[in-house]
Length: 149
Image (cartoon, rainbow, N blue to C red; front, side):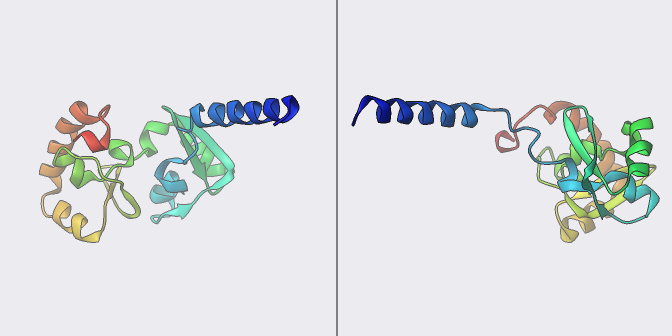
């Protein structure tokens, strides 16, 4: 291998390592790319677009329209899902499972996601108790990695 080829290979390796070390925390949009305002305004989930985005508390939200983006920007806390979008039943039990944006409820103005419809049925059986337990557990687990719970 000549010096030029060796140098090119080393540069390629260094570039690859730099890419692997990059921060990809913003690579996946919040709520799997669904427009969080649509749950409140349209009364159903609508997929957002990369043309209308807003960042809030380290997450990137996508919106179906400029109007929804502007609505969100005026009061983001009103629209973000409880527990950063983790399954509300899971959080009530002290766990973190991905929430399905198609399995949701708005309770007292707050959006809650659940893992699936069977889990949501359990959550719906005691909404007040689940929210109370979820709120208490969230303070303890919000910074924990899901696998550690």
